[in-house]
Length: 467
Image: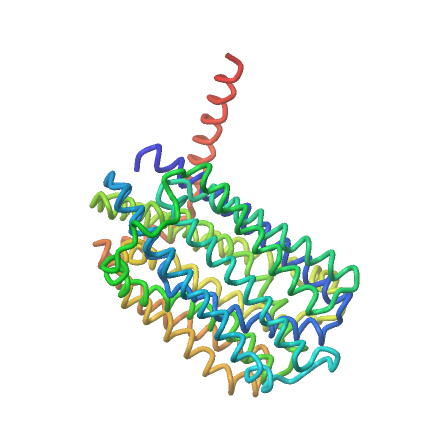
């Protein structure tokens, strides 16, 4: 790997680190804040309502992610006009799909909500449908931002795109938190989220036009054959957000419908602790993903192998260290964090931590296929694994409450790992023992080298400014 690629990876990891720290900070503030002003029952109801439109965050049908990979491979080959054609074709399709999403949620929300146990009679009926409608607008605005992010992704500026989006999300949460503190209910908070997200999309559009003037909306570049060509990998890519929806919103809904809103609050709060490690894994994986696409575009197999081994090593050890620290400190901090309204469940947290470590083993290796738009088989495994987790969670949650749902997740993670890792290693032409040897060694040398490179670059910039 050349120094430019390492610099891009490091910049993206810094942006991802900021994004995930911001996300975790927002979630950690959200729990005590919403519990204090709303109580456990109403907050649990909010979590369930938020999960319904979140299921439809897949409304781009996978086109955004596939377009990002394809545009990156084209720009790596110097074919910017072809990258623009892909963007304009996909953006029009995504606009149309978003309109269908909004109409579908409007029509279906009444039926979906009639099945849900209601924790607060003050927010039943049409008010709940309105909440879901505004949260759907929030989701749609984020989908459009995702389309614009393909430009930053393809130009090696993915870190900047992530930083902008994270800042917008922080502003959205800040407005929502103030609304809750001022006495706002579910409807008012959902309206604030929707309004802030729509304004954020317009701001993101303007910033994109400044940094990437070649990336513009339009009809002239639309090619139906481009849409058709991207259709198959897009549908396959769709299985990833669907699987993630099953993993997060699906498990949340299972716990809510089986055990009630109070159990949802315990499950979500406990999972947030282990999510610290997941965020670090994502920061590494998403930083490497654009580089996988560039390496595929240049047919550079040696770089692909380096990225794969170093990525698995980093995600695994980050998870082990982070979860170890969380298990030591979590029990003491949990009561203070939740204001004493949610009891710490040691078994639940241990099972969730185990599933997170297993996830770290395979979550990076799937990127090798995903970045090349050759991910159909892995996507099916991903989707079936988390769908099965939701099904298995029904009887397990009935028997053991939130711990049963966590056990279902652990079973799914082990099954996915056993299927995905061999596929990725064959694609990279890496042996299993080579992989185990790389993952088994703590990445101390790589971390020190990265710090050294960053220090030298910072010192160089400082010297140039002094001159």
